[in-house]
Image (tube, rainbow, N blue to C red; front, side, top):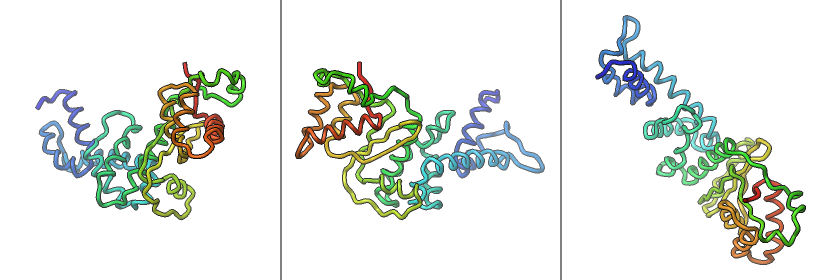
Length: 261
């Protein structure tokens, strides 16, 4: 094994960036470049850094997924995080991405409740939206300043930090209850879409009503107001005009739309 500085740095990173159990298995790879003394052998020296590194990542995930942790319990959450980090070790310097693949990882687990992966996905979405790009939202005043006859051709887009999350369970109430330290119950299985957005540095989320998912999904790529209304109308039962007016008012109030080009 090459003993130059770069090789040593890569080796140390590989050892400490793995959960403690994995680093113990790899410690023999250190060869003669890592030595011990009378107080600590090579394994003990490496374990100090490996344990501290893993604990830091565990603390990050505990902070990023408080509702998921509350549902699973700390013991189960910690064990699953160990398995997750072994399967998906961090690949970038920032801790921002450390939990990116936790929701799909949990979705493969057969030992936890089936709604937990959706809950984790919602928590991860709130993080990504908080750190998402900024843009000037289209306001109600700006819309009123446009002549009504021009509305149909007006191109709109969703805010670049907004996310649409398709779930098999309506996990929003669970996440909100846990945040408020209130009692929660297992959500019923039902396909829903949750919109997550940022406004004034705060992240919000809610379950969409019928027609909203289709309209906002179309607007995500840029579409005329007429096309957005048509997409919503295809799913709305009853008075589509009243429903679309209500939706538009809420989108503008929440800052979900920006003017297209």
